[in-house]
Length: 240
Length: 220
Image (spheres, rainbow over the protein chains, first blue to last red):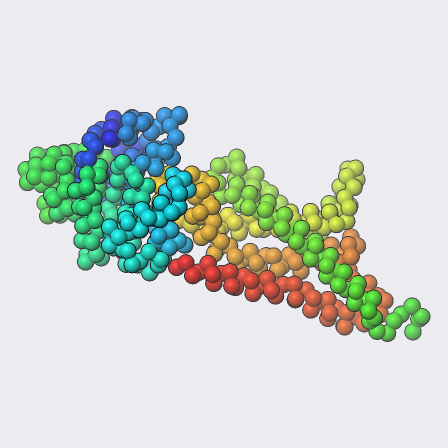
């Protein structure tokens, strides 16, 4: 589903991704952990080309992202993304937030999209909030709307960028529950998070990043219980 | 009192005032309407982030903003004919207002666009939306809320400033006021009426802005 080969990314003089390679299979749930500034969010943003890379190759579903003939918008339509700060559209109701892109990007009929949007909002437990505006919702509710919004595009791959980091502790679970359900449904997911419990429960693979490199990867048990790399051990020692 | 001086305003004067009012409306609707359309493009260019678009837009805005409206009118009406381009009075008035409105409004458009955070662009682009759909469905509806108060202030200012077109003898409201004052010497009454008519033009616009702002605010 995702093939990343030796990508390098610079912000000015800052070398944020150093020769990163990564393959993610269809249906796989990959959790990326690491200290802040390790490049994990940047890597995620490179996967739908919100950030261009300076060298290397990224393929999503076989399509090369930085090829001049690639219609990047078409690729993005297949890749759902959920952000740390929700990024809902404040001027649109919850239902309209979910319906907008399928209608204007996918050009699907409104009635059909409305049915699907309502079903998705029910699935994330917000069937009674369809007509309110994002500012009237709690953080956890907003984030669930954001997940429904991404899912309504019927993506092949979902990217989650620290989606629970901006939430009050008691709201984290409701969002993680939705993500766990999604993982059980077989969605291909790449999740940047600090939620180690979530990683243990659903991750097929855990990747530890530090200073722009993938330092260590393996099953959750391997990485959490038997870390090989010194920096992984230090990081886990600090957070567990 | 000389014969040609009336001591009161008659029905013909009232009709002339209404014609003046009509001409002012015509001038403003054409000049400011066209100005808003141009402002949208200049503002988009200014905010685009492409130097070859934003620099010319910035130059246009600065040159217009930093020179007097009256001089611009003189240039259009008196200087262009010297280069062989005769401009009718009405067209000169409309063109001047248009250029002025577009420059000031373009800055308001730019500020409105830039008030919308990068996170909104990220979300829209991640959903596969391109520049135009994102502008239309995400950025502009939110920017409108920021743009309306200064935008309406600008329009009201320019409606009143449209009185400078009286200097090239376009028979708009202010020019009618001058004509009637010369005829009747009733300066206080005549200019009082003229001022009241300007108020009638501008006040509804103010109210409209308030209600539009309130409606946009409804969306959280």
